[in-house]
Length: 105
Image 1: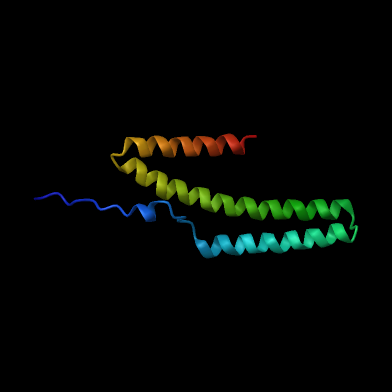
Image 2: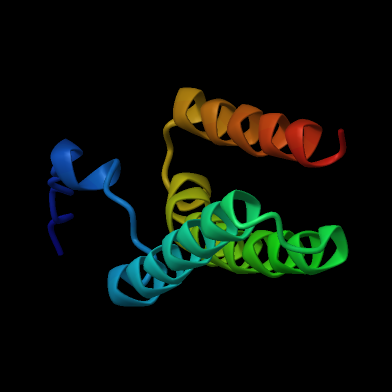
């Protein structure tokens, strides 16, 4: 039985695989929150109210980031480790380690 040749579309390899609609909704919600924060500061609102709103906005952004990173690991990183491309595997490891480093600061 002949082996099938694997054809890789490199343009698709670097595309975000996360649920685009979900991520966009989260980012647009955060943008709305930021617009509200700007108004709160302009209106000299109470510091604790502004801080609470900031934390809510950060939580939305973290949720979007987790969606993107999780999908990257379950998709791009997994695919890399199922391939025979050692350089790509090393690159994916370095990407994840870099993210962990940034998140731990």
